[in-house]
Length: 467
Ligand code: GBH
Image (cartoon, rainbow, N blue to C red):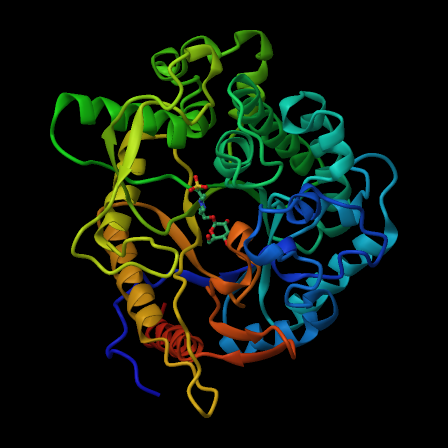
């Protein structure tokens, strides 16, 4: 097949993988004793998800996981990142585990290992048990303790076979897209409660790290989506806007995790929406426990300018109403998500992260990829050359970051399969493998063959170098 030759020169030690998430691929929503999650509820609320789509069937991975693992095996990846659906393991988010749910992940892990691939397990990729939301969800501290219990249950069952553990995926999305933008479940637009959710997510992470260590699980980390924020102009107002956005997007997570403190400008960003009474002595120590790795999801830069607040009354603002406004990137290609393709910002983001946080653990790129049109030709072949170029250029940018001293250990393409792209439904396709949602059949795209070739080439070079 045609691909831009040669493959980029990559660090010899780099591991390759692909990533998925439970609600986006599994389906089987009412099977195996699974309880409802906030995404089931959100999808059923009219007007929330494009075309009223849901994850009820998704890719039917719950029934077809063996076929999907065979695709992973043929791809030749070192690692496979997937998530466990909390409501399969604990249907109401508390109490005795549901054996059928745990059995499913047990079989999945064994199948992945038998294929010669190492599992990387995400405990929370956004599907909170609905019963916990009904009790206050991430706005209340108790949810952090429930999460730690759930983490222990999964680690006790799978800790002997899973080498890499990710507590949370993109807590930014849970706290702020879920509770302030309202474009993710639970879909509210709040101020202080969204900031409370951020704190309780961090606490949940820290408590879970303790449980994972106690259970003897392998390497432990968290996946964030550090954003590369670019001021629209060099004006003082735009630079200050970027600093506020840096706190909202990045520092809220990175400062407590890797610098032992809450962001020092949080009152400038949120004023009295910050509620110190939610934080207890000792929380920062729990949150800031040493990690084995940081997972980083990266897709695109964000350009911003200073702008008036949407809500004039500070007390009535949501947590994302911080006096900034997004500005379009001109003269670059945009993916079907409307995201600008600017690969060199991947290098800049990683180097910036490394320089700002000297205590940063090794990094895994736990997601990177692009949504494209992906129209099959008459024979069913998808010539996704734009995706191949995107991946090629981002891997080149990753290599440049390693060259500049950033300790990147692995890279996961989002995603193995086309899947349920949250509020956008099934129309946005990120997969290396096309999914026909009527027949539920899988069809590797050109990018799948390209990635397979890249991994094989990398292995051959590594072997050739005697590495
Ligand atoms: C990741 O999120 C997710 O981990 C993954 O599940 C997802 O499929 C993948 O990337 C591709 O999107 O305009 O304020 O409503 C990506 C980052 C951040 C993208 C939030 C959507 C909506 C922001 N996401 N964003 S808003």
